[in-house]
Amino acid sequence: MIDDDRANRNKKIIRKESYSVIDVRLAVIYYSSSGTNYQLAKWAEEAARDLNAEVRVLKVEELASPEAINSNPLWKKHAEDTKNIPVATSDDLDWADAIIFSSPTRFGNVASQMKQFIDKQGGLWAEGKLVNKVVSAMSSAQNPHGGQETTIHAIYKSMFHWGAIIVPPGFSDASIFKSGGNPYGTSVTVDQHGRMIEDVQDAVKYQTKRVITVAEWVKKGKK
Ligand SMILES: Cc1cc2nc3c(=O)[nH]c(=O)nc-3n(C[C@H](O)[C@H](O)[C@H](O)COP(=O)(O)O)c2cc1C
Picture: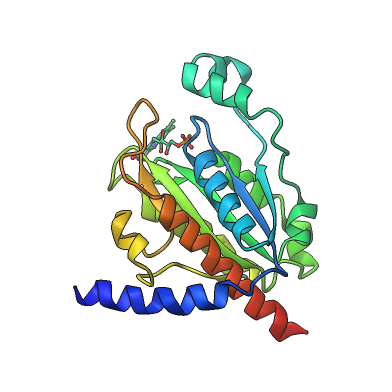
């Protein structure tokens, strides 16, 4: 009850600030083989559009062979359904004020496709262009304790090296309690058919609005 009260109080603070937010560019960068993280990215896009922020939804480059993809019907279908989603580049990171990463858990860690994308940013990093990017992360796994939090932490570890400003949701809104209570970033459990177990849509949208809000604070402060 106390947690709910505190979350509702904080919610009002964020919502009030959010209404005026428009001058922020958000890149939502995801990897997904069966559609979960793509759906999280799409909800983030909707939330950004609600605030009139500029938003790009981008997938990272696939590394798996066509044979591996085609051997799994869910993966094959998702790859076909999303073939027109643009692939994220360093230019997208340079363009963005705020970035939300979304990756499935792979053995408790970030998917290698996402890790490769992060590892390809040495050039931008060397130029100091990743400093002060406002970032947050989301994840999914087949088990509630199968690595959802460690995957988000793995992403954040690289963000420390970028000098990015990490914006976790904390317990600052009732949607976080409703979605399973991950204060590091929204995460969701999926069954073997790719169905989400928890209702995380509100948490994704809240996290996105919070990131955009903080990005605008940072952007205004820099002017
Ligand atoms: C190679 C591999 C490793 C995985 N490792 C884990 C794991 O450590 N813990 C877990 O709960 N789920 C694990 N999973 C399940 C995925 O996390 C799950 O399928 C994914 O979150 C679904 O996201 P997507 O639909 O966006 O691809 C693994 C799946 C694969 C293919």
